[in-house]
Length: 483
Ligand code: ADP
Image (cartoon, rainbow, N blue to C red; front, side, top):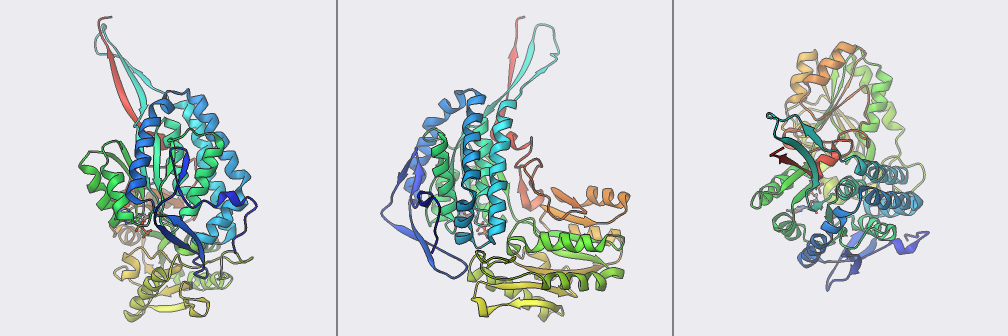
């Protein structure tokens, strides 16, 4: 049973135009830890999307016309409310998503940090003056909000993936319609309740719930009143959504899949590398897009590193996220667990060895124990696909050139990690790894001050940092003549 200090944070209807909207049908939200029913949520679908876009359209000009300091004040109030309700938001998140409570609490702070950051950045939406090529002109550059934003967000970070988009959008003067993953709508609706309490005006921040992702996606990507579409999810769905946006030439930001190499050279601090690998690989049970996907380990330390990693993995406790002391929770659903187990089976059939882990059916079909595979090749499916589960495949390499070649041999380009104590090598690797983000002697790289995003099939655009606001602004050039 889910008990909250403030039970009114548990909402089950779409939030649009500043009020809660019911629907004639509902969809169920379950707890991945045990399959129990958490809530029946309004299946607002296409109709709620259309209503929300109309509301966002209507409210946007007034919101943009307010002084930046006022938008900043309201965002700041929203940020403080998130922190005031951290425990309830974390409990809701663990219940619907499965991650350990400690991680859920940390995500609430992390998600809130984007609201705080962009509350501050709202006031720094500077323009430019450009020296003109002739004396009778003055060239000015101003930055304006792109307008109405639509966003589709995933289930793995049910809070932060929304605030990373909504906070810069609102700071820039945009309004936004968010369609959260149908697996985790409760965190999104709690955010909406707090936005309402913060005084964010009606229509500026909207959350539409529904089970039919495809139909809702059609509206959000094709509606003529939507100026910009932002997505976090799989590359396959992202490609489809980009093509849908092409018809009306919408601006897009895409945070798509990853296939992060985690490279350990023999000159690395091995204990630091093991700690980094554990944090990067097993956080959120391996269900993050920047999770280490393949561990590339230099041949001469391969066995030593593998042994140290196995010892560290043996200390990780698997179980329900709301149980004290648990480090690794369930997968989001049994299908996800079965897919991860299938990747492991495929690797074993091709000659890999399992050093520890495997399925844990005694806990239920959603659980996969932290697993380490050795003797993996980069051609195996477990190395080419995004695992999105707590499985660490170890691949041996001989030298720097081979490490780079293996690391870059993927269509993805989100995050990469490299451990070495040679500063020249660290810089060379940083420059040559074809990824949007590189952790050098660091396994956790994501924070509000840094630009998060990928290249190649991992998407485009950056979230967070001073660059994050650019995604929600247009540059306008004014040419003043006759001077
Ligand atoms: P994941 O594998 O992490 O679930 P998806 O790309 O399938 O990644 O899902 C990310 C988000 O996109 C979720 O909110 C999901 O409901 C939504 N989604 C999935 N398929 C579609 C689609 N065809 N059109 C629009 N949204 C979609």
